[in-house]
Image (cartoon, rainbow, N blue to C red; front, side):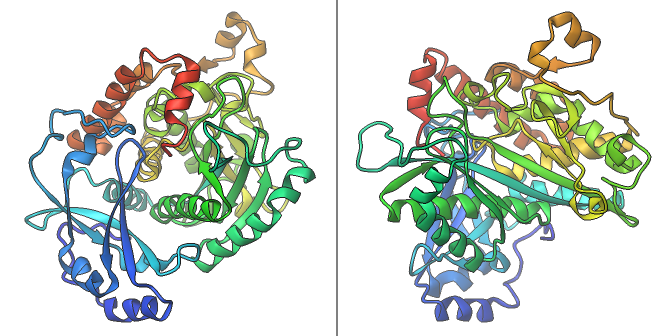
Length: 459
């Protein structure tokens, strides 16, 4: 996706793309845009109006930039309130007929102002700008979001697990085998290749991994995967939730980000003399991400409910450190089998979850990594084992620090990050802080059980 400063003068291949959708039985198209609380908002048009939408956009209020996940509007320094309007312009290159929602198609939308110029706080454009910035450093990135979700029965009050059985168990798979086959077929039909599917640890929890692609495309995929999961689940009489937790006493659901860095010589994540075979650009990029992790938590897991999941010894990545195949560190380096590093080596950032806007997430991680490259940063020694088993003196000696433990602390870290403030720009940076602080204030009086219940079906 190229970043443009004005609404494009019509899609050159719009007629052909619309014809394809019509042949697929599409009658209505949803244009999705995601707010800073990680909620996907939509406007829809009949297929016959899609060409006009691509040329001039569809109206939407900018008030959503400061909406919380509970639909409560705050007002920031730049955004919020009843004034103004935006134009949502669908990216027809990503428009796709929805396999699990007959007669409908989906397309992600970019945000422009009423005078046709780019909206300063467009999250998808922010991600594209960071991709372009990486290109100026001679770097390209591949990314993918790893999805975890929990299924509850839609005919039950409260939360009733849709299936049971041991973690990762064959007994679980037997109960969801048909659902899984249909879901994977839906995603493949929509151009999202699935790498893995399996039952997970928490009650009625599943996990799905998709193929890596360019960062903006990976964020698009994240929106589409969750939409497809929810739609297919409803057809089975289940509700799917990507919320951080349904049970604060148990394991939660993450949205881990996998990334690899490449330059003109190939993968910067393998074949080098640095730790775990990293080449200098790869090591510097990860060191930049590691340095900015406290602020990145506000982007990728900044809702108060996120901190119900972000607990030690649950493989949630709550420690600001890295390791090779170490699942308690926030950054887990995956080297791949011998001989496969150039294609398989990647880093997994584990502290993120489904409350994140994935466009903000991929863009902020790139910005952090590029700051590391510019500063020629190096990684500290990798960590092994569970840092929670060390006393504070041992943690300090190993250079291990706990990531923020509250939404307010994460917001403070984001507020003080010059790297992310500069990359996001004043409008987007302030809007995100406004949302995170408003959510923290709104949830301050909720205990863990009430917080989990209040947010169970928001994502």
